[in-house]
Image (cartoon, rainbow, N blue to C red; front, side):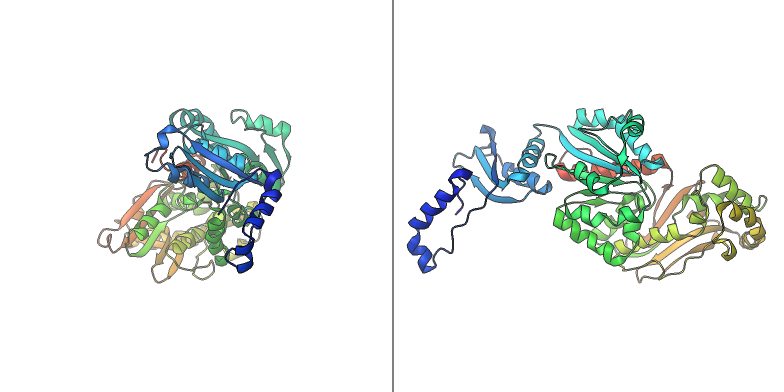
Length: 467
């Protein structure tokens, strides 16, 4: 039996109840009379509630998705009032969550962006462009309240003006403090908070479990958390369950291509995925699409770097580790505990050039052009083309490396920087399912992260209507 009373009457109420039930307390029929301080009542009131199915479910579901624990529930006989007792520290958040859940105010999501570089800056432009439309059409307030670089961060009092954020950052940024950043993104008065990590930082990835356990959602193209230590990867789901939070990482494989979601759809609908093969690097796809034996491979690598098609250090692409990380992420979706280092990765970086400077690497790479040319001519003689391919089967056998692929294979019919992934399954056995398209680029990757943000909003709102 729960009774809510004003705080200043709590002690007196306990004394009166203990006196009234003294015999039952002595005999053990009642165990104890306890007082829980600092509680608040949030109530939904309205004539339209009477006889309308789903009102209580929406109310309690809205509070649950905001990570608010309900201590007690009451509904009057008139069915015009549903009340819930929550911790007082959650009262404002509960009130805002209830308002947005019943469309009495905007559905507000507090956003923190880490890494406003090429991808992060593109995401902020997209949010600025679409913000008004999402507010007007879907009652959705995507409120960017914090932007952080490795050394400095900008915290907006209510929100950051995305049209002028760079100027404001230059004028008002303070030293980066990830604890202060999280606290600002996830204040008590806002029901939902998400951190969008657009970095490739292991340090930031190591923060995910803590953020998730404290109710902060995560969206990221950063592969480190999902392809690194397997025990940490497994801990993320437990942390999300603890904090009633979500994490989305579609863009870790194939940028905005629906690679992870397609694999999950196959698995969850009961299909048996037998193998996955693909070209997961837009940079390596470009290099071998362009290479025809007339221009040295080293010259194509240098030109690709100058045009921004590679990482600042091209060895980050040529080593194959980025592809290996993507394959590891897909393996774990299949339920395989695969770790980096447990399968062969054929690097295209000569051993003698692994530890030198970038300029020295580019200067000395021509010494190895004959090796690539020999592989190319051997492939052409067999009516094949060179492609950098990742392979995984259901038994956990995996490999990453350069292959000579038949000219009629789908991997030989891609645009310059396309990614292509081929799923062979029980349903798609004779004719594998293929996902193909641009797998790199800041606008594409940012668009994928934006789509994940809308998926998060939809899961929190249960019916906004964009999906």
